[in-house]
Amino acid sequence: MSISTTTCYNKFVKSKILTIDAGNTTVSFGLFEGKKLVRAWHVPTGRITGGRGTRDWGLGTRQIIISSVVPKVSKILKKTFPGALFVNHKNIGIKVRVAKPAQVGADRLVDALAAYKLYGGPAIVVDFGTATTFDVINARGDYLGGAIAPGILLARDTLYERTAKLPKIEIKAPKNVIGKNTVEAMRSGLVYGYAALVEGMIKRIISKFEIRNSKFKVIATGGLALLICKQTDVIDIIDQGLTLKGLRMIGEMR
Image (tube, rainbow, N blue to C red; front, side):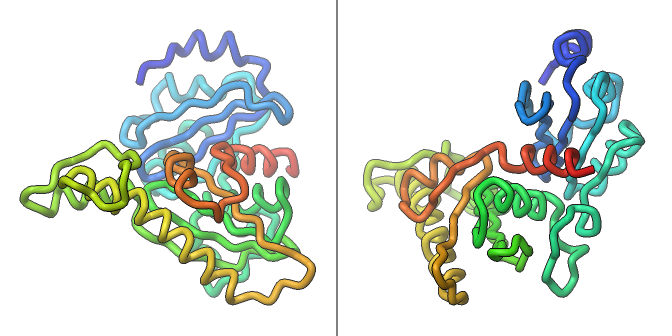
């Protein structure tokens, strides 16, 4: 991916907050003017080197807010943006009610905060990233924990890499749940299988709570959210900018 440093600086010099979400596969950037996302772009995680091109994306901003689950990239970003705020369980501004809060991915906590602030609670966030994660927020906005499953792309790649004959396929919904050839069968398992995973997990999570006069909101985010959510009716809201919005909120609170 090639981005002109000069173009970025000239076009976005008035932007106030730069948000960065560093994941295992992709690093997402968002530039906000107030609450308005004026620019978002994505860079493969392995291509973040901390060079001038990356550093200059922070020019003209008053705040840089970062969540990262990749230690190597965290080191690069800390060196590149020494004044940035790195989100963790201590500074996010919500109660993290798990045994070891430091082990919860910063992106999951940011998603929880954004979901509660934008849509209220109780809520469940389903993030279709490198991993497919489920995170639970109660009516007070406390983070209660969740579940982690292999992501769809990870499952696809594992099938290709660990079997002798299965091909590496494009992920899209097949016409029928019963595949008539290998590619259709794989697509069925990945698309309809993950839709069923989401339905089953949501049902199991909600069954653990007794909610009076309230209802869980289910919010989906991540790159494959649109594809999977078309196959199920348990998702109330799709917000693919949830993490970047949450990072912006943290910047505003500080």
